[in-house]
Amino acid sequence: MAKDNRITFYDLALSTGATISPFVWATKYALAHKGFDLDVVPGGFTGIMERTGGKTERLPAIVDDGKWVLDSWGIVEYLDDTYPDRPALIPHPGIATLTRFLDTWLWSTATGPWMFCYCQDYRDLSLPQDHDYVTSSRELMLGRKLEDVQAGREDRLPQISAALEPLRKALREAKWLGGDEPNYADYRILGNFLFTASVAKTPALATDDPLRDWVDRCFDLFGGLGRHPGLFPLFGLERREGDPELFSTIGPWGGQEKRNTGPESTRAETERITRK
Ligand SMILES: N[C@@H](CCC(=O)N[C@@H](CS)C(=O)NCC(=O)O)C(=O)O
Image (cartoon, rainbow, N blue to C red):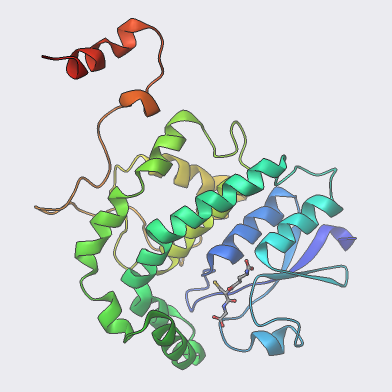
């Protein structure tokens, strides 16, 4: 298996050379976590069937010593099953379940809404031969002309940023989503931020967003895997008058967030809720 430690990796990239898909990004990190070197087959949205000899219409896909493995989750399961002696991507089955939950939440909260904010940039940044296909397929997917979908994003980006508070809170308590070390939970969630950075001609998040520490540390992993020169700055969104707070500046409060360490820790809340 994996002759000379090499795995063939079918990439999905833009004209900048940066990988575009959250699934493909997460898989790149998964392969790096397992310690493999990649033989990258480059390419964009069109011609996937031709490049893969009819094996798949969607990416990511890998070939390990002649064995084709499709689908981002399929690849992760394959890597952990086939190489149990290398660092685990999913060290416990519960991590897969929780990662799916978090990923689904993030798609509805940010990844999907960001697609609406950057879909015209996404098409414009795709390889020239992909423009027609990306335009027609994404207009069918999103239901309108890409220019109309993207319009007005300056009003939506602050709302998306504000809605990411649960992720900020989770990362306030832990260095990585994986705990002390990163695992597939980090890579899967990060893939969504890398997707956004690949198309974000205008930044999605504030310069001082608390998520920045985790994002930067993830970008730096594996020799700076997320530092591709084709990526745009994710941070730099300015708050305008009337926008919501781009992130919360209130520390932990209330029973759900705050540790009960005895009456001192709950006194202010108790006074507030028992006031006559
Ligand atoms: N369930 C698949 C989904 C893969 C997928 O949908 N990939 C998209 C990129 S985000 C793709 O290959 N798109 C090609 C196209 O749009 O024609 C996985 O997790 O790998």
